[in-house]
Image (cartoon, rainbow, N blue to C red):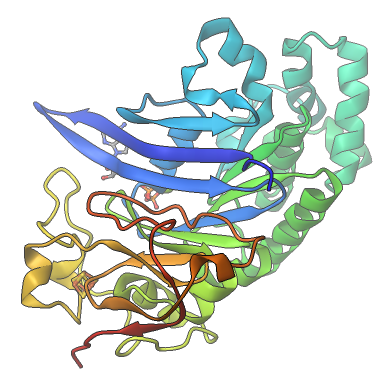
Length: 356
Ligand SMILES: Nc1ncnc2c1ncn2[C@@H]1O[C@H](COP(=O)(O)OP(=O)(O)OP(=O)(O)O)[C@@H](O)[C@H]1O
Ligand code: SF4
Ligand SMILES: [Mg+2]
């Protein structure tokens, strides 16, 4: 099996706040194979954009290692980082604010190539082709960003991100500001481009309904930790963590799993002062006494699908050698982890106990 395109281990990001530190990302691990889309979901403040910023090397990380496209990505600095940055690109939520209002669309899209040393003439030609491909043709390319709609500006952002032929594109709420029909158009475009250009995506979203259309894998972040991760189908159809179940409760395809799928109640706690034990315990409808004290370990609940909750126990264990050889590390490990490689694979996820 070839190495994943992106491998993240023990990644922690802390911000200085006042005299203290806020841990926005807390010892996370995941792998992403080339050509796949990892959807990262979680409430506002769960650390999604901080993960993106750390991958893009826009914020420093406190611990951890990032291997990307054959490079020790977290070690790159200065000129070497500038030279390699084109491999990982970004599509933001609000493309308008990331575009220079004084530049015509085609110039904005050509700019990364010009900065990388391509002649202005060739860069313009390639920008024109790229814009054609994302559906902004002819005179639209000579307009200024404020003369275009939100959907058209997202197309510019896609063209600008893809012009330098990246391997990985991080989409941070890239379609969230659009209305539903435009979201579908842009998601379909991203899916087409992924196949055409052999792209890999990290797709950060709070639009759960989009996941079945774009995600191959899903990672669920809560207060900076990945609490559940696995193949999209497995996570969406059989979410195991009460937090994931709450997030997915609006999805018609989500099955109740443990207890009932109830929307997540209350507010996300302050990450500068996270709850003890399981961080979700103050909000969890199924919390046990031990949840306030003991941090749950990571359990494999289905092939390649892991979650961390005291209620989860793998049953019907089979030998790890029965794993589908095409599957990858579910990539959630942390303090107290049993580790995916050392946990016997269950055939069916089940729960030890559940409170109604
Ligand atoms: N530059 C910063 N300095 C201090 N704290 C920050 C900074 N950036 C983010 N945070 C905090 O880190 C935590 C995670 O923020 P982040 O923006 O990564 O969350 P998010 O999941 O992307 O949220 P949203 O869905 O609202 O975009 C939040 O508590 C946020 O307030
Ligand atoms: S460990 Fe306890 S509090 Fe945390 S999600 Fe599981 S049941 Fe809820
Ligand atoms: Mg964000």
